[in-house]
Length: 109
Image 1 (cartoon, rainbow, N blue to C red):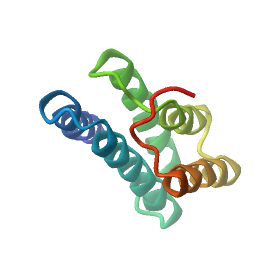
Image 2 (image 1 turned 180 degrees about the horizontal axis):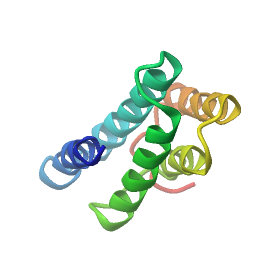
Image 3 (image 1 turned 60 degrees about the vertical axis):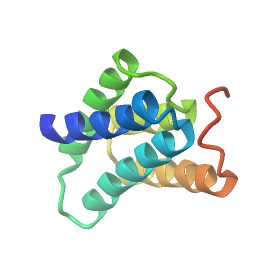
Image 4 (image 1 turned 30 degrees about the horizontal axis):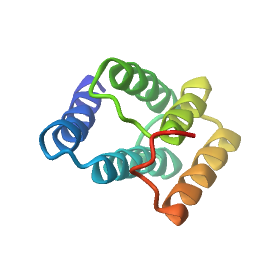
């Protein structure tokens, strides 16, 4: 799990720090999180593992490069709380709204 978090943070950091691309950094981050949610939904990842990943990822992003869209942090908070069918549905709904609005460069609520 640590490798998953490191990889996600490294890719996000490359977009934010090196390429100065807030839009693509946050878009990648949401895609990576949603991918992990789908892995749980299909049985390729345990709910407890996703909860731990969400917790570690949230902590790493708070320490890391910054500029994370607050709604993405909210999704991580939902998953950090618990990975239940209800929370997965809530996280995916928030993700859908973010993709619909297509405002990944917005870092304020």
